[in-house]
Amino acid sequence: MPSLKGQEMASTICLSGTYGSAPNKMVRLRWFAVPAAIWMALAILFATSSSSVSQPQYFFLTQDVPVAALMIGFLMLVRWQNEATRKQLLSQPGTLACAMLVMAGIAWIGHYWLMQGYALSRDEDLARLAANYIARGEMGIAIPPEWRAFRGAMLPEFQHPIGGERYWISIYLPGSALFEALVSLVADPALSQPLLLLVGLAALWHVSGILLPARRDSRIVVMLLALTSGQLLFNAMTPYAMTAHFALNLLWLALFVADRPLAHAGAILVGAIALGLHKVQFHALFAGPVLIILLYQRRWLLSAIYAVSYSIFIIFWLKFYPLLLAHSLDIPLSGAGSQNASISPRLHSLDPLIYIPRFFAWNNALLLPLSLLGARSAAKGFCKGKAATYPNLLFLALAAGCLVGMLLTVHQGLGWGYRYLHGYIGPFCLLAGRGWADRHTVHSTLRPVLQSCVLALVLMMAQAAMIYRFVAPHARAHAAIVARKADVVLVDARGSVFGQDVVRIDGGMVRKPIIMSMAHLDPGTVPDLCQGYRVEVFDRADFVRAGVKEAEIERSTTTRRMDAIGSYLKETGCASSKLTGL
Image 1 (cartoon, one colour):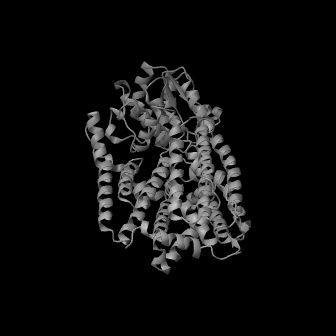
Image 2 (cartoon, one colour):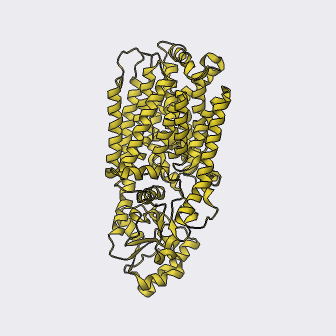
Image 3 (cartoon, one colour):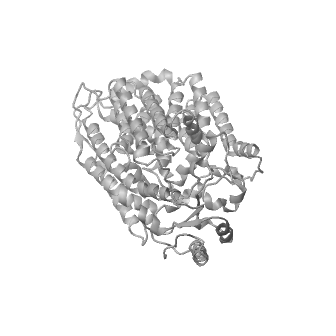
């Protein structure tokens, strides 16, 4: 079997001749738009059929439906012929580099202007928390003895079980936080995600040159779709690990398709880091379908090297990393360190009906239809014979990875777009470039793509307004808590949307006011808290004043326990502000 490098000629012939050879062929996208409209209608029916609306359904109805409706309308109307043109946007490397730098710059500015410099969700806060203690050369945050009885109320969720009573440790793997920590030593840590975005975009351009060597127009399509992805832009404004997954997946792919010994060594090294960014399954599911190519080519030695290397890396991150934590912090190993890896507990939350439209709505309108055309083209080319095996194998592997990602659309919590597909945006763009090459000649006008980019930019401005309206009130609520002249602020988040996530260890340092979740507070510890500290309460009325949306209160064991705590605070006069009636 010839190597990938040796088959580049076949790729060039295949993509410059057979595909897109039908001149003046009218292209319509109603084949995608009509099923998409039906899908949206079913999703709306599902989301509005229950008496209460869940958080994913709320975001779907308020953020995704209006945007997706406009995008589907565009796809229903857009049509074009293979009109010839000699002018190509972004045809000069300098122009492309400037566009990438502008996108990264907007992401950095947007962290402060749009996201208010605030880590909104628990996942974001933990990423920032881990970056803070790693930057100090620590493996976790030591819990002061006087606060150990309140540790669960001070950091309510996603603590590593190894930390026990002595340390707060993020449950997630440290790779992404380590990168932010390194950046923080020399620059603004908020630059870490924009820098990773630049790495990913540069790697995407490089990979497109290998997979689409004779189709510069298709490479431009690939980059235009990435540069107008709201999901890429807005998530690069946050501490989420997803931008790192986007960057390292594409860097790994660029090294893999180079198909040289040193490049494969580099890919293995990048894979070791990518597996430890956040959770091992994200990179493993991306790389797996691509590595199957080596088996098809009967390159047994290289297949074995990758298999052994990845097995070692996965064992290290799931087994030896917890041991390293325990040893460095001098704490007993709980044996629960590998729970990070499993996605099975979340499979019950599969909801492609809601999450695939969310991914669609936060990207360019042409991304999914063109990528489907690209996957279809690769499948057809593969069936025609081995003359086109090289590009088809790679594109089919990328399509398989994208399919797996779309099948595993589990609950993501907060996120702009569907962030669990973030690492696949590059492959989607590459497949879309292949789809463009399938339907157009090398000199076809890019007018429809440019029209979709204009639409994407307009919609991104609307989405920026949506994000600001949601994030700013939570940032104000957190700022109001920090400004309290108290030793301890108890947060009663009942009746507020995502109010619980304002509870955090700011800056990775335990300092006053100590913010605690009333929902996670042991009633037996409240008297000690009242005797030794000035206590205030931040409740529903305070959240409303900050502009946080209200939510229905569900009665449960937790709410009854919180009622008991509230009654004690009122009776003893412990809290200097009164609880509102709930």
